[in-house]
Length: 261
Image 1: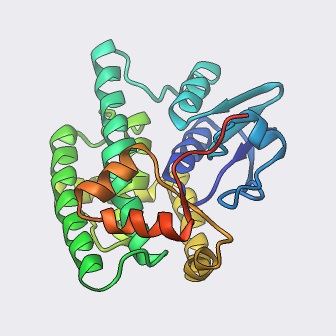
Image 2 (image 1 turned 90 degrees about the horizontal axis):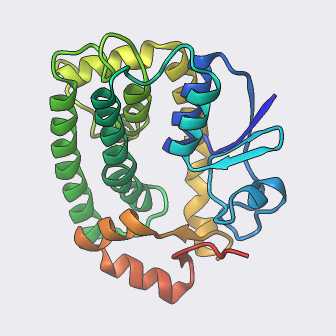
């Protein structure tokens, strides 16, 4: 039995769960203890010194980073294939995944900072939400162009490109930035949500959202820290939220990187 350390709201973990379910590979999903509070330990922390989900444990094999995990899954369980056959097709899908993992995730993460963690309220919160909505609209337009007239990002069948996009579009929808239902991207999203692997994964995410009502208070008490790194930090600064970062530093409730030991 595979073990997947994850959090249901992590789009990176959602990608992996959808892939495993498409492959028919049974796994046990676990949320690591101490994550976000600096207390992660055990095989999870040993597998990933940055203490980030997802982490896949397969016997003696320990893998972190969602893209590397997807590559491992595709190598070990080649059927059904999740990547297109041609090198050009595979490169196209990997570029779509990279855009979602960096640009798209940062927008949704920023909205989580505002909506769930209440890092910005009043005029600043409104400004960041407006900019996030504008950026989401542009990204979804780009995704629609990548989809074109295809049923799936992969082409004729559901695959890597679709599972790489679905978690991010779904999170956008939760923040009120869903694609228009009648658009090509909106119709694709409806097809994706109807797929068993995606439906179950998104259902698990929805069940976890209820617990987010208390996280702002936990953060304020210093029992939890937000991770600011790479594209997330870039998004907050370029969208006008430098005040959020500086205030978090003053309160010591953000960190920029987990320590390697």
